[in-house]
Length: 406
Image (cartoon, rainbow, N blue to C red; front, top):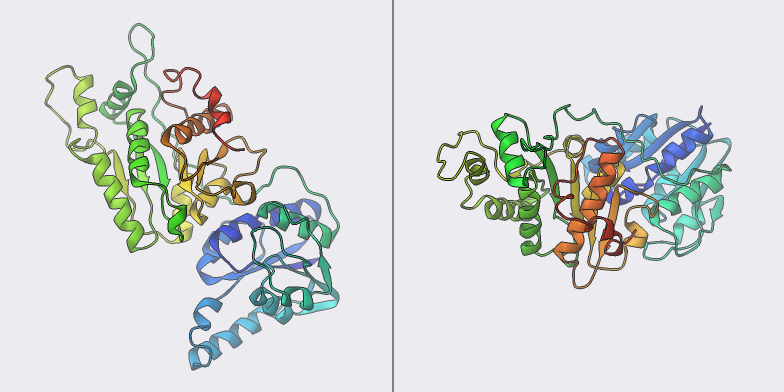
């Protein structure tokens, strides 16, 4: 059976639809699954080996100059590529006019059919042409999370059931073996304070475990206050983590630099912690002592995904990059200033990801407690991620569930 999925954009929406591929593969092992997506998001789909072919289009750019010679040439090439294969099922997972157009252009096998949403679901865009183009329009309960919506649509179209927990199907090379410094013991056998754990690891030449801060989002009202990021970063630094700061544009780069400067300011990297471990008055600091925070270069989407996979975890706002962290099954806290986590946040049955919601914004303590829960579960699950400071926090981690929406 040959199946075409149409989900063009945006990054978060594409990530949310990925479990459909694994659901189809589980139900129909011999199916050939192709996917049409905007060119800018194609690299992340290349990390999903269950896909047979990723067909990239550039509708966003073509709309800016629809009658230019380059646009006409590229549009014709796209149509020829799209129509190479006759499909038994074309499933429009997006529900917009642009996805309906692509679904209509796709070539059907003699008994093939086009499937689409029959109705709008809460908080999601929907345009009537998707229903007009479809041979079969499928109704989904309006208050349905976005991941569940795509899974139900495909399952009803193709006649199968799917597992409770989604499998996003991204396959990324494993992290280096020595990605997390061990918790060191004092001679008496007690756990050393976090600063001493960190500095001892540095002195032994061990790499620091990294936590990615995903602060960038397309909407200013989804941002988390800069002061909150700094306080959270200081807690994670004290616990032995290095903060890494990705960015996708000039504005996000400026914020990443501000965060890095604030966390590294007056600290000389981890020099004070290292000096503390060497005793009062110590002044010898290795020149290669790692920084508390590092700004990553701007990375292509596939390279960014690989780098995130090597992190001990991710803390971020509601954005496409945060949703990649969920797809990678990393320990992850997703921060919401609006009560939309039920729709786009981590699956309620997930254990290593939590969403935290409050208005005007969640406080640092709520996010910290949610992180302790996620990272502790990651350690139990065998990811190698520990929750530094959890022992000193007493019951804080256990009580985090009350602060974190699941």
